[in-house]
Length: 382
Image (cartoon, one colour):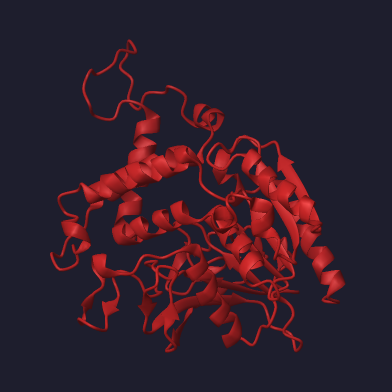
């Protein structure tokens, strides 16, 4: 419990005003699951929005009241005295629309059919999440966030906030992210989706009615993704070519069961993920990733796409992140510099690959801590 926000419980906020989506479709009403940490001050200017990545949720920090073994996915970053200090800031975590951790998504009931949405749940874009999150800010009476922050997919949301809600974010913190996916990234997402869709238990996305789930496909999808989250050096350090149960003379078994420790690790991660995540949510979120490209409306010119942004920026990348490599972060930085934005950029030499943004690294945490200390000083939050 030291330096922890302690035991936390989420709230569900229902929005009855229809939400128009980027696709042109509407959600008549929806619910978002939210957790908050710290106290919103009288000026309501100390709010920080934390945007989650693909398999993240509203449970950013602390210990879940529903499961005391469930620690927030960014608990090392958010809490009393931590880099995002809840003694100074009021931190909000929101489970995105379409997710499977409480907010309205494919497993929710479609009001038109009284059955789970399933494959009929509307396609989503990152801009839709931002618009829904803005309504949460309204719910708390927050006109402008002190900071919007996220890593990976969360960083894309933070970037979208700066572009589309220009007067509602003072600081935009983009970590291990990208302004748009490369063809290689889209390819990885497509292979993962095909693994799910090809599972006989997928049933066109309406597997809820069959009382089953495409666990095998979802497990493979997670295994594929997990490989991209780790660097080659990190995988070599953790697993190398170590066999799980080597024979006395070191020979192989010559079969297709688990032979190497890296295989055991990937299968464990995939099977664990398939037990708690929803396949339709995985499809939705990976497609939202594919679609994100602020420069699509400016003929590929990222500088023009970022021109509306007024926020101060901190952009941070990791040297061994080959999923969203530093070159992608530098694209954002170059565009912001051309536009005259206040921008700080750090590229950390870290061996852990894309997952580095979730881990404890004293240099990384010191950078985030220093940036938030500056925000607190400027807003007189100390």
